[in-house]
Image (cartoon, rainbow, N blue to C red):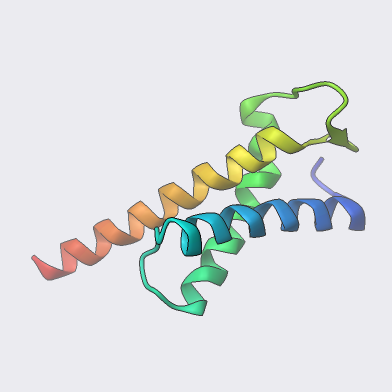
Length: 97
């Protein structure tokens, strides 16, 4: 899964886009309310979706495209975006102290 084809790239990008949009616009969970912050979350979400099957496993059978499992990829994108935003928030509060 190191190299994905164009279809896999689009699927990972779509899952990361959905995860970033839900967190950024739905739950207002962001470090800054800006488009640049959203694209940062999208990039981190793509990485989370890309590596998530290695970490979370390969499940459920049948819900996959060339070794990209949709549910673990979505959860990986959500998880890494949360870690990223919390890290940025902690840096901002450390600067204020």
